[in-house]
Image (tube, rainbow, N blue to C red; front, side, top):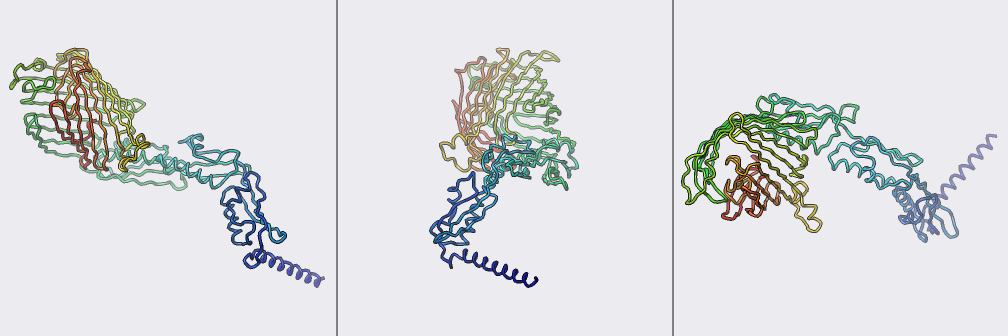
Length: 585
């Protein structure tokens, strides 16, 4: 019996060796010279054979090559439609038939998302090229997942990822999106500044999806307060909880109290100089305090205390007093100088405001007491008109401002628009001598032109998404209930912040309209060229046919101390040059 088993075992081993040698001979194409009669595909139901064979290098009439066939198997598999690919070699007359055997992936029955809250399933499906009713392709679907993550990442949600994908045999695809949420926000390093002053600038709250674009701009606002030498950020993912990220802010404070000495010269005000003491973070509560004086032909003494921060729960407020004297001030009427005069004024003011629940909207109410005196008319031109000096006295006003701010808070440049309307009511109470209502409204609009112009122009590389070619416009119109307003209450145009081609207070009246238009062309990150046009008038009547305009060119230079502004304007009567800080609007 044992002998029979040994014989049987030896026969099986012999046949196995013969089979292996036969296979080796079949695959040893270079040595055997076996010709391929045909190449075909089996097992495919949805994917046509021509599509599959189009990537195959093994062709009828060629010599059988084992390495080339293995490469073809890998290439077919890499098409993404198949879960399994093999080859069958069938002997035929004068050669061999090659049959690639495939097992198709399931037909997609559904695509389901979970964990997505920032974008709806409908929005995410716009990034998915794979469709229900088609054969699942893992290569295409990997690109679909990459596009989903790119959608999140390009909009600032850089920590979001596709955490899991399940493809069932019956064609149901389940995709899990992980949107890490903000956990604890830890603030450290501050000794003077109250923690809530820092925290209120970081709008991200516990439970929000982390957005790096929003967070970066919030950090910029925090650093822009001027309270800190440096602000460092770190992130920590709690152990075992990759759905949460803790934010750690470490600040290094700097001295916020300063003493300032200034010297200046104005073409009308002459030589001046003064001294100020200020603290932009008084008591560590973000209060801004300033007291100072300036001497010269125009002398001022002032003190202010304010808190500029406001939201739907926090009031902004300000208090202040100012005393000013102005010797040998020029008075203009309709753009022409009439005489010189002296002016004294005392002002006390108090205001407060708040944002609405929709924080795009805010209001601010300011009360003012102003006592103005005009005297010593001199150096008058022949036939001069004096409609100024009869209007001094005490003025009590309440001013209500309503603002709708739709600028993009996360843009690196002004983008969007701001609309505000103001009512100023003068009342004869507490010593007031005048009664009138002034009302004006204005809109500031900022439009990036890159996208519109790029359709038919090749824009320079310095016109990019962070610094585009920008059209800025300010439109303002105002009137009053009185034909004649006190001189200190009149609308006034002329000077570096309104009609740049004219002297300060060249045009005054109880009605006013104005338009300022600027085309801002960034040269590099530090330098911008501005081309501008101004038009408007202030008069006793709203006469749009009696406009005054100017045009010119300017430059904006960014420095560590702020943006320097230089404007050269050509008006009706003369050219004027201005030097200042910041944009006009």
